[in-house]
Image 1 (cartoon, one colour):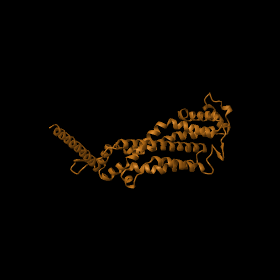
Image 2: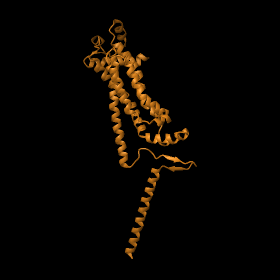
Image 3: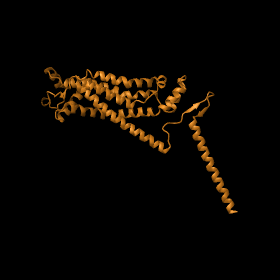
Image 4: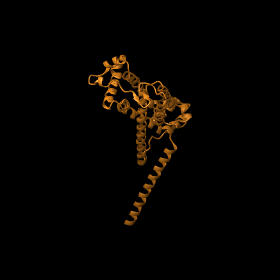
Length: 298
């Protein structure tokens, strides 16, 4: 089942792109990466938007955490009022975790395609679909500059690039959280730690990965960085449009005093007082105009 649904389609996709792009395996991996990113685009866009929304709500979240640190039930209630779910702070790691089955399948596909022995060719032939002419493609060229696509990078350039590109992508999507907020919110603390552990883990894995798999990693991360900047620009533009219309990006937080009576925050009271003053002033102006009109008639 695994080979039928994951490995074999990857083998045939790589061979198809390899044949289409002039027997260049690096270009075949690049096009394959773009293809995979297009498939997972809706999930990535949704998760990135969720992370940016969480980042925008951080001032309110931290204020609630500080005020109700000794009352978890009240803290969760206030979180619900502003539409914040602490578990969503881990959402940014989901697209990375989903890559694991893709990476395992791609690793098997590359090692199967790049096999140079008769035994490896014997294992490859039954996996290839009928519309691909395997005899004109093997042996597959595995050289690119100093790299052998079926072997790890001997100079560790690719593992460093894997770490750097993934760290930038994680940094772009992970909202900054204070140390106090990390202590109050374990989910936020885990998200911050994943920002460093995931790039380190994948960089370490790349020391043993075939170079072709590391190339896939780097290209996927670069696409993710561009996508993250695009989503950030959209979010900033929407925020500016709401500000221009006078609409706040988050609802007013309602506090409760010790007696249980609800009271608005200082900003809410100030806004309410300003609205009441404007309304009183408008009513007074209208009354004065009516009196002046009656005096003129007399």
